[in-house]
Length: 208
Image: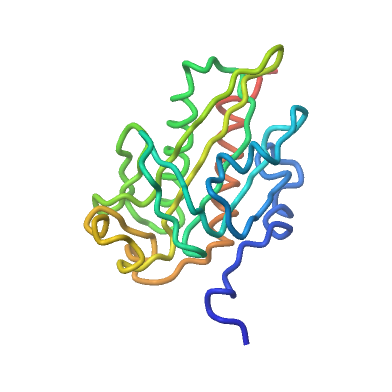
């Protein structure tokens, strides 16, 4: 029998099957471990990569938050992923992507779980006044092409209080802690990506 923590693995092919025509999610990669998903997705991407590539990691060893802060990412307990995008915006407008991501994730948490998330600018989402998710956008200039944007997202899903370092236990929370029950990460990942895909296309797709 598989250990309990092996039963809730993210499966790339099953996730990708939900996005045959999407912008975000047409190609999905799940790594067992990486330093940072924002760094890893740049290693996978090529100059010709279409936008919408999504890279998850079951465990990040050096995940980054805003202002260089470390993002704690216990293996198999959260959603740690990055999205490769090519929005036709200036690098100075990268905050638009951060706002898009945190508003969309907040809406998914509210809809899926009837919780009341609160956005804490510039890039955090809180539940019960404790951090449940964060976004880190990094943009790279491209010659003769839309600038490259990496949208890194971390969501605390199934951690218990003991999974957080002692210094963060009063400031961090997971969805499972707020709900008093575990969350199906695969199902939640699909809901998050579906809503990110829909809202990205509404906000950033070229107007016909």
